[in-house]
Image 1 (cartoon, rainbow, N blue to C red):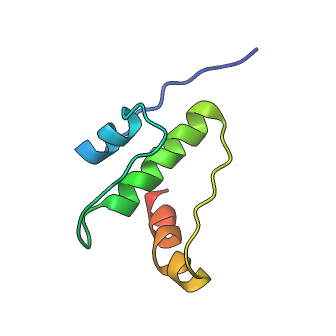
Image 2 (image 1 turned 120 degrees about the vertical axis):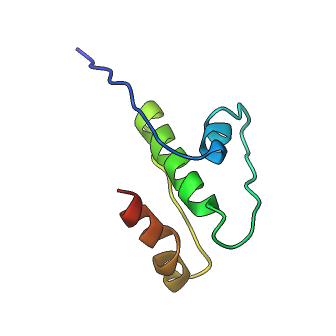
Amino acid sequence: MELKKEIELKGSIILEKNINAGTRIVTNQGGTSSGKTWSVLTTLIYMALQKKLHISVCSISLSHLKKGALLDFVNLL
């Protein structure tokens, strides 16, 4: 038996547009501290939970990943 639970997300308009894009590729543009990483990570978490996906987030170096996406991911949780 499979249980389905509805996920409620709180986020910006960017998050809503990312989730409802309906395209394979979505581009997020903006300046520093515009919320791109936060919205993309929230979108990826939502997609992984809905579709049971394995998602990798990559960066040019491990230090960039630790200071950026990984730190935001930990704070998001």
